Length: 266
Ligand SMILES: [Zn+2]
Image 1: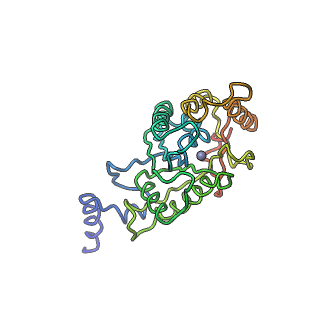
Image 2: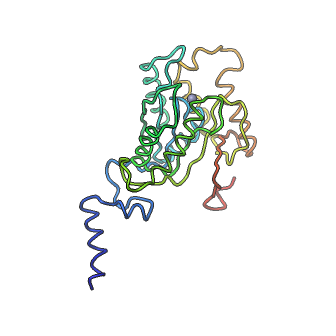
Image 3: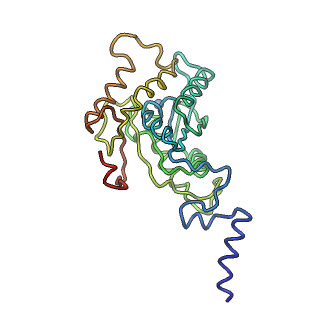
């Protein structure tokens, strides 16, 4: 008799006082989502504003158009650059976010050019993962010529693990983001064989428009062929060719990639 009453009382108490801690740990998802939890379908983590757009812009637009909740976390302001300023970059980012149609975006304000996978940064990022609870994280590819990108890739992996730790002082409830894939940056001019390619044939033009919003970064290049847009289109066309469609965006993972059913294959 006594045993039968213990579990229901614990659940009722969790609902009333918001203590979903042990339940969420068991089910890997909150049973009673709170208003401050984003529950994103996709969180793209980028070092600099425009990284997410360059590496995964077509995919972001595709998901947002399909009604999915997509967020972007920029780790740094990206400044200084030759033609930018913090104010200019913020305005460009707002414009890009509007075109993307995303649900959430934040800049963590970590130091550009000096980004490191420190314990302190890992702690903060783990808190963001707990707040946004993304089903999928997109991170920069772990191999790059840009040291900030390499550091970010390591940092995101580590923060993902810390996000699930119980009995810690990290803000929010423990949560392990179930999937993490990497997008490629434009700095390393070699793209290792991707784990999968997403068809962005219907969103490539919009992606080019989003990238063009970053005028301080791409508006000062020569208008002669090949322009920055030519480069993006050429790479997207190659990956589209590789999967027998128009345009594609490649992603890579250390983990095995599953598909829900046969029709997901193209
Ligand atoms: Zn970058």
